[in-house]
Image 1 (cartoon, rainbow, N blue to C red):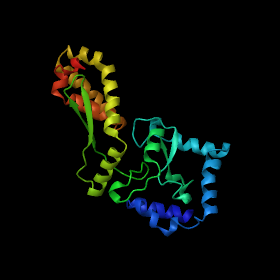
Image 2: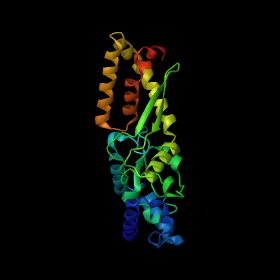
Image 3: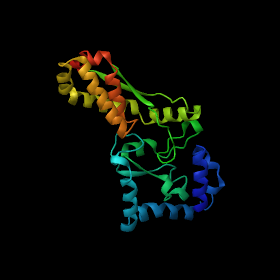
Image 4: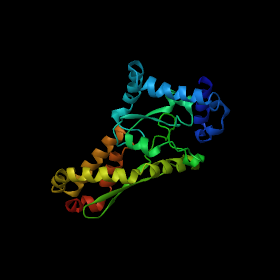
Length: 245
């Protein structure tokens, strides 16, 4: 297991976790009896026993604000095996392989394996996406107003990372999920925004920009951050479009 973890970390540094199914380090000790024992160590030991459950819960509790790091919208209520335990039983209780997640993301990901570097999911512990905004949004002048979200690759990202971020965004259906959240948020904010608009479009825009910068200090790439920057930058919204939401 220690050898497997060392191999895991070496591959993670090069974003090559998709290739671990060919690694002899993670194929050792996977005879049927060993596989079953390793999976039981998770199912019965980590999940089912009091001492193990305390460790399980502590990993879940490490997620900032209790939010799923895979989507940024769901509530953490389970642990996801980044590499599925049925395929990589030596990773069944490996801490670096246990990611707090919401049930939606856990089920969406399933036990599928990436076939190439470009389709390797993002690893919340290991992937560094830089210190700039890469999640952006656009306000659609519809009735009611709607918001679409997209990935804007940073200039310093290698092509493989840009492809992985886009694949992650698409695989977890984040445009739709963020759009649903944004629509509800706009409905709840309509009265306050209309009150600010009555004082002038510039007053509203300044308030929206303040909210965007406040969210950015919490999470530069939260859907809320992208939403407020998009609202502040929408001439249609700040000049009365919001009244049609």
